[in-house]
Amino acid sequence: MKKNKAVFLDRDGVLNKELGDYVCHPDDFKVLEHNFKPLKELQDRGYLLIVITNQGGVAKGWYSEETLALMHGELIKAYEANGIHLSDIYYCRHHPDYNGKCLCRKPGSLMLEKAAARFNVDISRSYFIGDNQRDMIAGEGAGVKGILIKSDQPIGEVLHLID
Image (cartoon, rainbow, N blue to C red; front, side, top):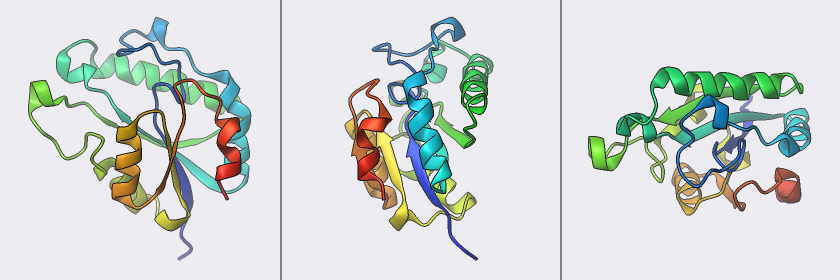
């Protein structure tokens, strides 16, 4: 069976506007429209697009999983309206100050590993785009190449790093 290649994507600061802290309300959730074109290009080049995000605000009680689902629905809808399919969104709802340590929270690589197994991903041909060092550590732990960007930086500026 042929393996897929994937680009794993952090959420806040990569797919939606970074607010400096948690995005707690759907009204504050702003999709970064400058990334529609480059993500469509990656999809057209055969990459699966998979979101990997820490959402510790759930553990803190700052927003519910229902609110998180609304925000993720907005993300999916915005990207689908531009011809982009997000294969799935993996999130860790834990926070070490509230739940203790978990295996899924980045910089751990469990969410990437689960996604790679589910979607039959060839990790040697895959990437993780994130705006934080913990994203790079998680990608490295899963065996994918990390691409560190600044928060809200257009992904188009790093497309040349992806084969």
